[in-house]
Image 1: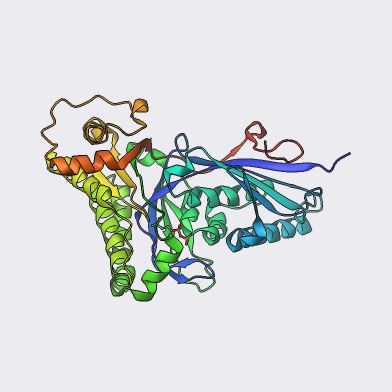
Image 2: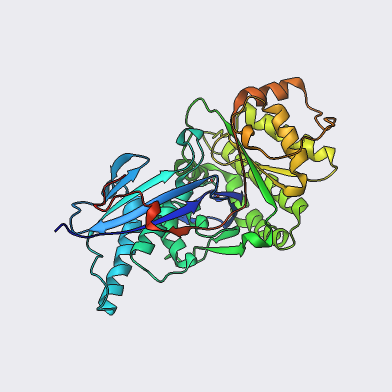
Amino acid sequence: MSAPVYQKTVSAPVNIAVIKYWGKRDVGLNLPSNSSLSVTLSQNDLRTLTTASCSAAFEEDSLWLNGAMESMCESPRLSVCVRELRKSRLELEAKNESLEKIANYKLRVVSENNFPTAAGLASSAAGFAAFAQAICALYELPWTPTELSRVARQGSGSACRSLFGGYVSWEMGEQPTGADSVAVQVAPVEHWPEMRVAILVVSAAKKGVSSTAGMQATVATSSLFAERARNVVPQRMVEMKNAIRARDFASFAQLTMKDSNQFHAVCLDTTPPIFYLNDTSRAIIRAVESINSSVNGYAAAYTFDAGPNAVIYFLEKDSDLVLTTLRSVTQNAEGWEKADFKPVESSEFLNLEPTVIDTISSGVSRVILTRVGDGPQVLPDTESLVDTQGNPK
Ligand code: DP6
């Protein structure tokens, strides 16, 4: 009889920061220079599905990512997560005689995204969150999401925020060990379920500087960066938490846009400068500004990560206005067929120069419409990505 295969399947969400993590104070432990805050996006539209399995029959720790096999020991980030989880399972087995002795079995982890990798969306957050959550579930570790976030953080910083749904902060912590550098839920989805998200996928000619490399260059060379980490972000974290608690979209929007702009300013202040925004991104900023001037306030907020894609937050009550505007400037983009909104008649709010509209319409290839969503889910074995022998399906 062949050796039994133990397995657990989970899904984890993408999160998009509204107060950005940029800069490490300790590269080895992956500790950030400032706290950050994000919104978790719905897994109906964007998620990573991961099955973690282990068996006496497996010969090495391996990872299958979207169909391609990778050895885990070649990735220090994956190895550190596995080491910590395995150690905790060993401790659990030592304490509880009745537990199966699976900690030293080799692992096979199979992971897939439900969105095209070609879309260029940061998938490392959902990927590492799902990876840590799947092994944690397989090992039956009695951990809270905050405890698990300490492990996921070492895979990829932003991954720690994908262990909760809703509105999530990553508190930078003070301890040199990183024990207090963890994710905490600011508010669950139900607190402010009206938050909507439009992602405008901007085709980039080539892949830019990775976030890991980019933030290290910033820490080493930017003088604006120290001011941001020390004085600006701590204040903004307080204001953003207050805005979320009060469901105050105007404050949420202002802070989100200011923080995205400051993050990109700090990139520009890096030597050599890092450019993540392109002409299309900047034209989208103009379009969002024109939506906001049309309402004499705030109906939409843009934010950009380490690439040209725009993420636009808005409330359900403003969906018709925001989506009518965005669709009118991205007619050729894929993804509108799924949109559910009532087009607004008047387009006087579209006070945009024709060149701005052309730049957006030729630069945006796809739209993904989604909303705030829940944290990771442990799924039944029917969703598993491996067969009973532990081979990827
Ligand atoms: C711009 O989490 O990808 O998206 O910790 O080196 O893996 P590593 O970095 P990563 O950086 C994300 C940067 C960001 C901002 C954010 O998500 O807060």
